[in-house]
Amino acid sequence: MNFEAFREKMGYQPLLLGAFALLASGALAWASAATGEAIAAAEAKDLRDSLSEVLPQGMADNDFLTDTVDLEKGGKTVTIYRARSGGEVRAALFKVAERGYAGDIQVLMAVDSDGRTLGVRVLKHSETPGLGDKIEVKKDPWVKGFDGRSLGDPSPEKWAVKKDSGIFDQFAGATITPRAVVKAVKGGLEFYAEHRKEILGGQL
Amino acid sequence: MSDNYGSIMKEGLWGQNVVFAQLLAMCPTMAVTTSGTNGLGMGLATTAVLVVSNILVSLIRHTVSSQVRIPVFVVLIATLVTIVDMAMNAWLHDLYKVLGLFIALIVVNCAILGRAEAFAVKNGVVASAVDGLAMGLGFTGALTVIGLIREFLGAGTLFAQASNLLGPSFAFLEMKLPGYGGALLMILPPGGFAILGFLLAGKRVMERRLEQRAAARAEPVAA
Image (cartoon, each protein chain N blue to C red):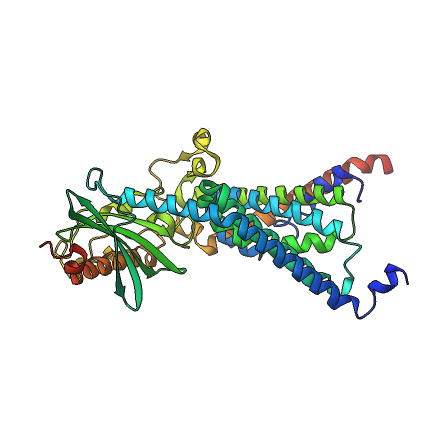
C-alpha cells in the first residue's frame, strides 16, 4: 500500500496526532530542561539586582539573599530578606502583590526599622503597555514617590490616588493600575507594622 | 505564484497585508499598538515565529493529512512559541524583559495559522520562508505605523522607549512634541479602531487612484 492511500485511512489520523503530541511534548521537555538552569540563574540575578535597587547603598553589610524569615500573609508565605549592618536589622525587603487591571502586580519594597519606605519597585505585571506600565521605574519615576512614606505620612485616608482624594498621582488613562500599587504598598507597610517584632527579632 | 519571490514579497507587504488587507490578527494589533516601539517589537517577534512556522509546516506538508492538519499546526505553533519564549528568557534575558509580554501573545495570532493554511501547506520550503518573511514584515510595518500615529496623537511622542528595545544607539529615534499633553482617546482601544479605519480607507482611496491612473494611461491606446 502506498503512502498516499494510507494517509487517507482512518487509522492514520490518530497515529499522526499522537506522534505530533509526543514530539511536541518531547521538544518542550527538552527545551525546559535545557533552559531551566539558565532561567533560574537569570531570575536569581534579577532578584539580587532588584533587591539592591530598593535598598539604599551602604545599608547592608550582610548577604541579605540568605538572611530570610518566612511569614504568613493572607494564607500565603512571604519571604522577608533582612538587610543588616553591624549585626542589627536595618531594613526588611519583601514582595507584595495586588490585583491590577490585568492580573497581579508584584511589588518589591524595602522598609526601614522605623516603618518608613526606603524604596518600591514593580517586579512583574501585565498592565497595558503604554498606559499602565508607567509603574515601571524604567518608564516613569512615579514609583519613587513612595520613598520615605510611612503609615502616618500621609495619614491613612490619604493613602490613595488623587482621584480617590489621596496624594498619589494616577496616570492618564490608567487609574486602576496605580490604585493597585498604592494599595499594595500600604498593605505592605501594614504587614510590616504587624510583624515588626518577628522581623526585627527582639532587637527593639 | 510559488516561484515568484518578488510578487510574494509585494503581496505580503502591501496587496495581502495581514492587517490592512486580510484584517487578521486584530487582537494583537489593537492591544500592542499604543506606541511605535511596542508595534515594532511585536512585529519583529511575530516575523521570527512566522518564518520558522512556515518552514516547518512546509516541510511536513506531505506527511500531514488534511483532516487533522489544523490541530497539528496549532500544536506545532504553540510548541514553537513556547520554546522561543523559554530560550529568550534563558539566554536573552534583557531583551526578554522588554519583549516577554508580547511573545505569549503570538500563539493567539491567527495570521500564523492563516499563513500555514493559505500558503505553507501548498508551497515549497523556500517560498514559504519568503512568504513568512514578507507577511511578517508587512505586519511589522502596519503595527509600527498604527502605533506611531496613535502614540503621536495620544501622547505627543514618537518611538518612546525605543532604546529599551533596540539598544541605546537607537535613542535618536525617540522624539517628543513639547507642550502637547496628548488625546487619551487615541491610546485607548477606540483610538486604535479609528486609526485603523482611516488607514484602511486611505489604502482603498490610494489603490483606486492608482487604478484610475493606470486606466487613463491605457485609454489613448485603446481609442
